[in-house]
Amino acid sequence: MTMIIGLTGGIASGKSTVSEMLKKRGIPVIDADLIAREVVEVGKKAYTEIVNAFGKEILNEDLTINRARLGSIVFQNEDKREKLNSIVHPEVRLEMKRRQEQLISEGAKAVVLDIPLLFESNLKHLVDKVIVVYTEEKNQLERLMKRNNFSKEEALSRINAQMPLKEKVKFADAVINNDGTLEETEQQLENILMNWGIG
Image (cartoon, rainbow, N blue to C red; front, side):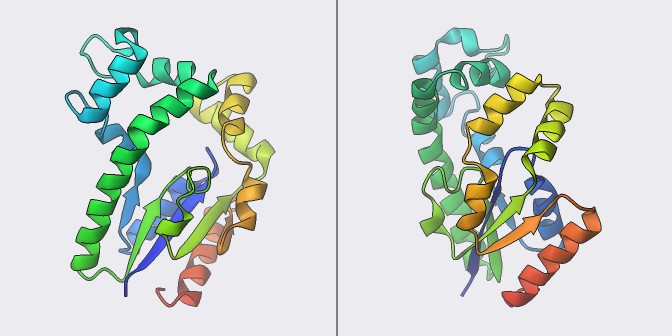
């Protein structure tokens, strides 16, 4: 039996770092964010629906979607965010399922689904175990402002659009505290995988 592991956290919590550590160990990671970019490429079903819903002003000159422009619209407006999610999420799920089945058929011991909004989108039923990557909110805020050149307000609006990390921890099977060194993060991951028999 292939173990399906959900990897989640908050924006700028260090989830991508843990994802890379898993890949280095040869554990395949299916990344919801990467797939979300692929399903909105020009000509895809979700692309057409997004342009119909939000208008051509969200497009770049080369007709690709301007993610920053679309982001600034949906992060200010709950209804519009829900509309975007209702277009993108089903397409992402279909593609993730297709890749997961492929990996299972190839005999993967474990498959990781890297889903930032695992709990917010009620997707816990898709996985056997959940790892939450945790960081203190002040660190999350600092990292996000630095990484994306956001003002404090912009960073907070992104953080507040997600379930607080303290809440996510309550639903986790395992938690990696990413406030220390990379070595400490790696050691925590190592211990979790060993406990689950996939170390």
